[in-house]
Image (cartoon, rainbow, N blue to C red; front, side, top):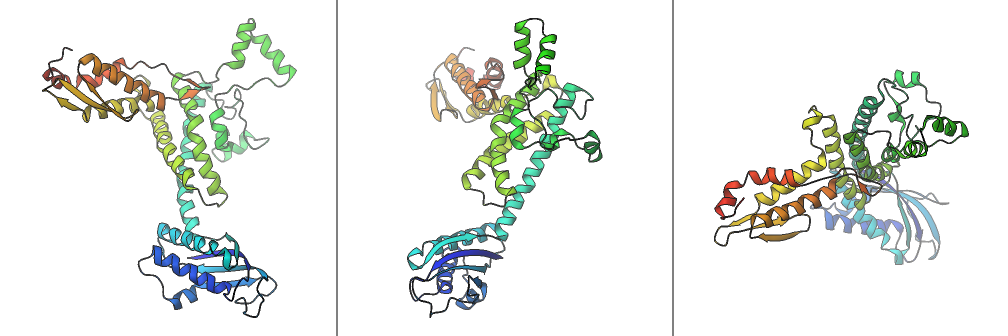
Length: 384
């Protein structure tokens, strides 16, 4: 796997640039690879392709100390496996950069097959995520606005990135306006478009029956269905980590580890909420993602609980607060589970403008989960 580099190098000793590359490459392999290449193999793996103004294979010994060069070189790394190769490349770069006292002042990495393969994996995932988003958003807006297929964004503040987008163009490619939005647009899809010309304002005033109605027309959400509005509000926190990783991939940059971690954290809840929206369950029986997280937290707390018949107590683990709580009465257990349910809901429930989109009462969820443990509760001698 050949990786290309550019180096800014000042001849600071009798060591040549080539020597520093070999030394750094040898250390990187010894620390990260079970079978490091021989010196001969390392020699064959290095190609100093150019040195500014000299175009020689190596920096010649006769150059005086203090003379500065800009050189381009390539290294052919052994591993085929992406993660292993990536670690060796990182170790090599770190070793070479640390040789500042020996003349290495600046290092840049360009063509990198390991980076390309790693980013290609993320590109595939982001392709799937964005297509799923386009599908669920199309469903929401078509269900709201009917057959106005190519003007679904008429009431929202977001506009497609392409000017003068024509219905015929979209129809030809089996697309709609959502194919021409950025990730940064998605969180604003339920923000109403404001009048920006006197004509628009006069038209809106003419439709309003009084000031309060007019004010409500300006601030109301275009999508009013509770389930749809909740999903759109959840995008405010879930698509930003996706976009940050996408930007790195789209511009062929190395993705920072923190960006990867935030992406992995956001990806599953986003996909789960999309799958929930696209499921075939009827709306009456449908539970949203955050409601399922509440139930899972309650079930996990009781599944791992320690039931102590001798002192009529049960110890449960509150995953939200990361603490154990010992309950000695049925009411104490119910109260603790209510807290766990409410806290979990506040973590996963979508917010809009700092306020939760849904009102939540934990009583039914707690009662449903406790019903499965009625026998254990009675063995403690508690009244239900």
